[in-house]
Structure formats: structure tokens, C-alpha cells
Amino acid sequence: MLPVLEGLSGGMIALIVVIAVVVLLVIIIVSWWIRVYNMFRRLQVSIEDAKSGIDIALEKRFDLLTKMFDITKGYAKHEKETLSDVIGLRSGIPAGTSVKDLSAINAKLDQAAKNIDIIFEKYPDLKANTLFLELQASSRDAEEHLQASRRIYNSNVKEYNSLLLVFPSSIIANHYRFEKSEFFEAEEAKRADVKMEF
Image 1: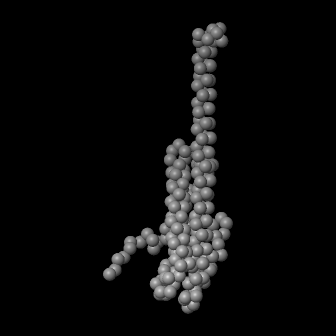
Image 2 (image 1 turned 30 degrees about the vertical axis):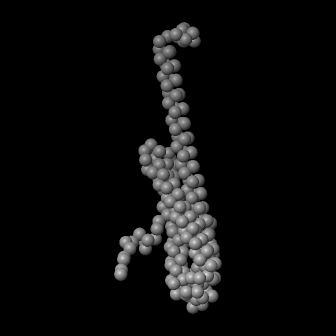
Image 3 (image 1 turned 180 degrees about the vertical axis):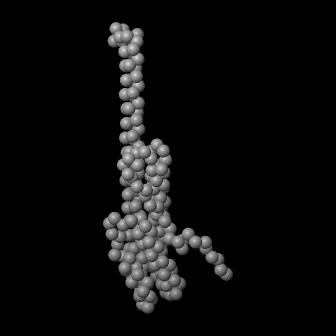
């Protein structure tokens, strides 16, 4: 037996053991609480970072589409409505834009890109314009970057939202009133079944 415990009665030793176990349990619970809380905070930072990646990709798309329309308008002066739509979108993404609004902006950009493709098909000289072809390739790269940013964002949101709902981490989420994050959704047209007509 330890020299410190030699002079103590059996009841005192049992009390010391119980206190030691309780202290150990409190330390384990507090450590777990801090670890899970920090996990929530890290995921929130990751979600904001991924949302910033979407913002950057959308801004890049704005720039590319604007340049493409500048080239295109020389060929298609009567396509002013399409051009004005892109210029309207070009005003940029305001700070604090919700993910739902970003999805709507993305849908408008998708429509503008489709309009560019229609104009591209109408004007054979435009097809030969090297600058336009380079911008078109850059636009495809920007679209791939946007897709990757969406996947990263949605992956972080999925992990965060799962932690909110799963016991025992849901206890901490409820205590600090953490709220569910929105997924970056594709617009309805992209989710619909594709009709193939020949």
C-alpha cells in the first residue's frame, strides 16, 4: 500500500477513490465537450471558406462571360438583351449573400452561358475568333472550378449538419444554438430529366 494511505481507514480510502474517479470523469467530459465544440467551429470556418471559393468562381465566370459578350456584341449587335443580362449580373456578389441567392445567381449565369452558345452557333466568323475560343476554354475551366467549389462546400455542410443531428454532439449543438447550413442546390432545370429528341 502507498505510504500516504497507510494511516487512513478503509472508508477514507474508498472516498478518495470515488473522488478520483469523479474528477477523472469530469476531465474526460470537459475534454470531449471542448473537442466537439472546436470541431463545430472548424467546420463553420471550412463552410465559410468553401462559400468564398464559390464566390470567387462566380466572379471569375462573370468576368469571362462579360469578355465573351464584349467580343460577341460586335458580331451580334441585336443580342443586346443577353448582353444587358450579363452586365446586370456583373455588378458582383454582395458580401453576406446567402447560399440560396448564390444558387440563383449561378442559374442566371448558366442561362447567360447558354445564350452565348446560341450566338456562337449563329455567327461562323465568331467560331474562328481565337480570343473568343480561348475565353470559351477559360469559361469551361471556371465552370469546373465552380463545380469543385460546390462539392467541397456541400461536403463540409453535410459533415456539419450531421454533427448537429447525431447524439451526443447534438447536445452541444443545441446548447450553443448552432443552426443548420444550407446546401448549394442546382437549379430545377439541371435536376430535371433530360429530354432527348431526334
